Length: 230
Image 1 (cartoon, rainbow, N blue to C red):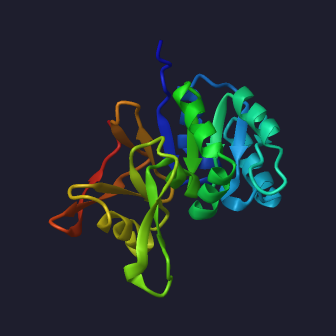
Image 2 (image 1 turned 45 degrees about the vertical axis):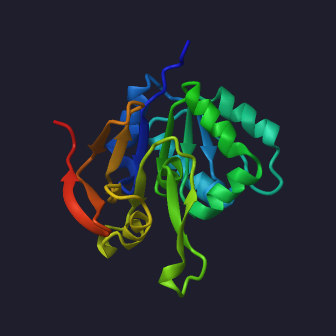
């Protein structure tokens, strides 16, 4: 029997206590004061950052928020237990490549993928949202734009997305999309907005319009924004 997977919430964050998308995530998963497993791989399990986000999540309605350590010195069996017992899993922000390297080194990317397949609800904010997607972009030589390449993320959501880059015109998203096949679409999640990605691959905007770009005849061009559902 197949377990029903929960929709993924890919959020930019940035609205503090007024961010309705996090509250909607808890409500949509029938979670009252949910136990949250916090994955801080993208910030190298920075404790100061964890404490800040812990308070933020509690303001949004979370109950307990436990850090499932992934970085150096982590007790992985203990972290797995935290993740298994939690009502929901939160992938926090930071550096996408660092986060994925940390997860892959301990094979925790595979563990998280299996948790999701079993029906565990996941949501991410900022870099965490990108990590939940299919892949992201890096430069072998930061001074050479021609060295751009894609690297894999968790792939729980079959999307390519970026967050918070609305003022710069989504340059990194466009660079990533240029490396994809024809007709691929990339999503720019502005501050305060999000994407809701369903298991059947339907996608909805949350909290406001989400920018969209497409690779068309070898060129990346902007298309109509994805608008929130009525």
